[in-house]
Image 1 (cartoon, rainbow, N blue to C red):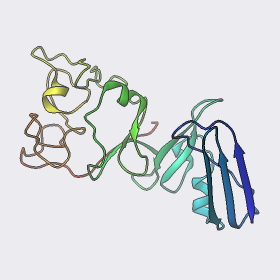
Image 2: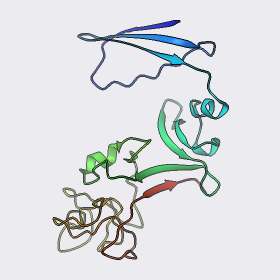
Image 3: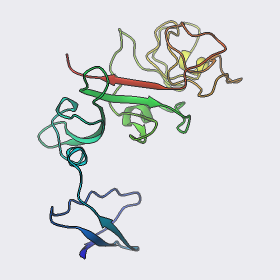
Length: 210
């Protein structure tokens, strides 16, 4: 049995990562004591496989991994960030910056949400700091209009925050499930190649260095 006690001010929705000594197996008891809260829990620890061990190891980039999953990637000397690395597609080394798969997360959000990121890395999400210029276009949301369309806000018209210029060529953040009667969008689509009565059910945007 291995016991852990944390006694410190605990803000709401705090995430903890506890790194246990390699020799620990069996039951682990955890007591979390905050200013006005105490939480006691326990769990069983079993040895990790080689692939699982890799997933919990800090890496410099997604190019360093061989198994897809969530990794703690080094951003700078003082900063690490959890990202989802895709290792199986086209040689691997991809950092996933967006995924849509079941409509569980609402993507019709404010600009600040897209700046900070939202969702869950193991499900639907948008990664933070993914708002760079795209082919000369700036990112727009319903309430922040950066497009060059003279008659209004395309992100609002189509219910799809994106790097819109003066037309809509992509609705990857559009309404999941097809037609939204409150917007012009017919669902999730790309480059006007999708039929207006159809929509994508799965979207994954990934980046990697050249």
